[in-house]
Length: 430
Image 1 (spheres, rainbow, N blue to C red):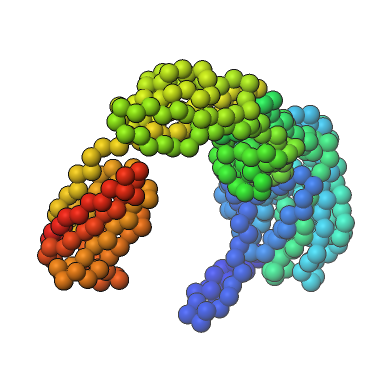
Image 2 (cartoon, one colour):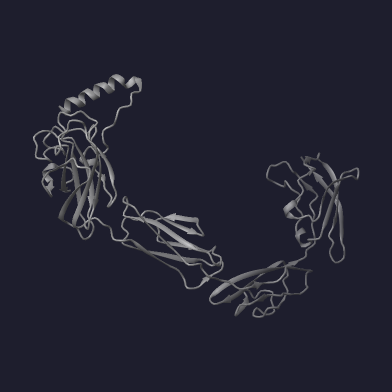
């Protein structure tokens, strides 16, 4: 009867398909191979509506309930924990077709999952059961540890039209309760400013962990499957949190967070940049509160172990100053600029070909107080800069408009110790 009913449903679907008729679908766990995994202590919705039947003696449905009549079954699977023992299966029936006799609506059987879905390998844990009560509880004992078991439900409603039976099912008990996962997050006792700190996560009772999310002050910094995380961007009082889930797909969330982290820091300064003429000597002026310090170079330096040594570079040179305190290191840098004669180019071509598109004046940054004025052949100002630098090099425009090619005049006031002024022409080529 049930098989004939399904033929009718199929023909109706074919007939009404063009009219966008909404037809209920068969359960996704209609077959053994598609068994739905049950998570401990979580109800799963179940429906036998449109569950199909197997008609061959080697099919997964055949013989599960010791019947020669093909059965319409739905399948669930669960895994016992490392202890095994007993479980309780709760069935809450919410919808039963009219005309089903009490005691005959729903049958349950539990199998040890052996040889996948081959009926010849089924190991039955119990005999068949029936229920139509709203709250029915079945107990099964002596389940093996770390073993997959299958719950098979049979609609058992021969002669009764679908919509089938709807119910909720839950497994609980000693055999399936998961051990409580935990985590330990460790990192260095001393966290140094601007230095890389390694965080290590240890997971306990956490099989099948998903991707691990690392946060700094609730900002997601990294997602991976690694149990370590590195950061060199920590500030004092930052908080690091790590999150993941265990027992996938029956996920249990786990999170661990640090206390506000003390980031060790101290003052360090290499002093201000300075400008000298060739052959001159500059005195450096470093300062720090660290216990240990030194200049991390001996080139062009009178003494690398004092705060205020003399520097005598023959060309522009940057001096690294290193300070160390409580195992933490911080660098600062100071540059001694050595003036050179300015060689001002007299042509440039702002045609956007990537070559010579701006008017570059080498070493202009050695004169941070300079002022540049550009005039056309009539003596009218077309551009000015105060100061002129690599950050604002002239592109041959004035007030956003491109100037025509031709010869222009410039006046460059260096505003140095001798108030040197340079004049000349610049040819703009388009």
